[in-house]
Image (tube, rainbow over all chains, first blue to last red; front, side, top):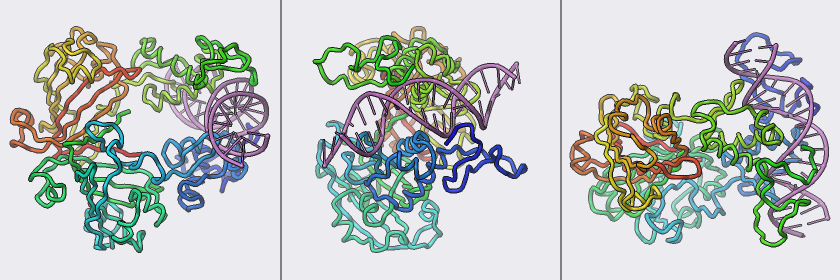
Length: 270
Length: 270
DNA sequence: CAGTGGTCTAGACCACTGG
DNA sequence: CAGTGGTCTAGACCACTGC
């Protein structure tokens, strides 16, 4: 691309906003101007969403992508940089750029912010997972709203307990849109060795990319306290998480209760 | 700067790692290679820390800084970019780059992650602040450890209650190193109209840049419940925050209790 | 209109990885 | 050694702000 040329490359179409020299309706303002690298970014996002590259696999090199989209390397570089800071891609110098995954990481649980009170990281070995229940049901109104479904749509509901050092610590209730997770059952959940989000990736092609949590202090009821093996009416951390795939589509709702007598939820504020 | 020249500019000294053509001890490995923009970044950080530019004021333009440090504009640009994503600086197109501040923001409380259950943002107006106590005391062992002081060092201790829509919601206990906050008393706290971090900036030149929180579910004792006007033994969110200035120096410890019956703590997971 | 940050390019070289 | 991402430069132009 020569600089100073008003014409734009046909990345997929052309520059989305009104450009000088390009015919554009003079009326209808607020085109907002989308820079080239943003367009490249969304093209790469689309390829990720379409599954053009597998989880954990490498995407084409910057040079290749620059040639494909007919832009300079620096422009695809900026696009990839942003996708990397959003944790959709992972750059590794000398090796390439890879599709982010929940599997094969040293950080076993990407979205879990719970840390033991003493002994820093994973010093107590891997978590023990116990699937209590997994069945298909219909979405209640609040569940449907958070998952952007209609009330009564089919959802899979999973209940499980996570233990650390043999102490039950997390009680989770998970809802998934059944249409996207056909064939999921308690057997497959129990058989899968890694984190649940890794199962979603490898068996259903659903990558969780971002999540939002709402945290409250609550008193566990007797059933919850029994599953967590605590005394009755212990204060617990209620963590309601909605996890999103690409394009901010919600794909999982997870209501969790954390015991915080031996652990705490840690958060970094920028 | 000509490219391909092995010699490096004397930003403040010179490139910190072994460079070809520059005399450097061939022994003693692991220089780790610090790129130029990182050196510029730390120079700008030092100027921020030294108070060369006031809170909320603009720093020199990219062109000026490039001239000052004898590097290209793109290099200082990358340095500023990183400082901006770390929230030390704020870029405003067409206007300049500004020193981040806790004052004069639309987001009144930069580090507060508490949101009302309904009615999105600040719909219930500003918080009411009530200073309960402010006195000088000596740091206990745990307080000293978190503030990187010695046990028994002088600290200011502040207790206050924050109310939203006239409902007491947050009970805070704050510890500050007394040596850095000389002259702080309950009168000045009550007189200051803005957030406490804005007071720290404007009256003591201390900018809080980053914070870390540990969150647990607890039962409030009777004194705490009284201040928060709840029934006895209500589950509360315990939020222990350490706030840092530049260079990861801890400057504030804050133990807070949040009522989460009408609010929740919200967190985004990337 | 001048000045700021924001985008885009082209090219050179450096550091890291693996065969 | 070739290939990848990472750094640095120089220069042109664009978009936004305020005088």
